[in-house]
Length: 193
Image 1 (cartoon, rainbow, N blue to C red):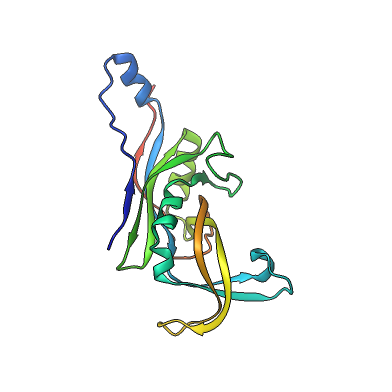
Image 2 (cartoon, helix red, strand yellow):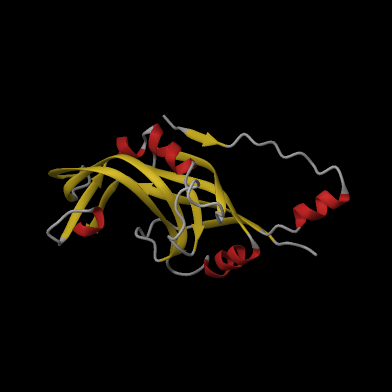
């Protein structure tokens, strides 16, 4: 089963030349990118709020990644470009863009986002960095972490299971946590004078 969430906004053609000119003066970049794949991720214990230091390995099972609530939280997440400074849409009145679609793909066991990045500054930033070796997405999310050692069907060991995930924001920036989270810019619309 594939769950897809999309915005239902209809864009009519502008009625006047002035309105068309306004639309053309907004620099945007459409993107598609992975948000999170099922699997094992390694963290500093303190990063997840655990005492004692050291590294821990958390397994996010496919059934948790595929939950409607997680996909919906991705859809409603704030989008930031070049930083993790911006958080939720409620806290951030000036996002760098919007997620238009969030989808779980069973074949890759991952959630993907499609959306749009706004402003000339952000569009130029992604255009310049898109071809960099490590330029992608990094999702910030909350989860319930249950201590449980085990091994995934793929043979990876873990210390905790992550469940009940809620995405707070999605950042597009260099050096994402997961090297597979590569941003693909599908279209750039430059502003015209």
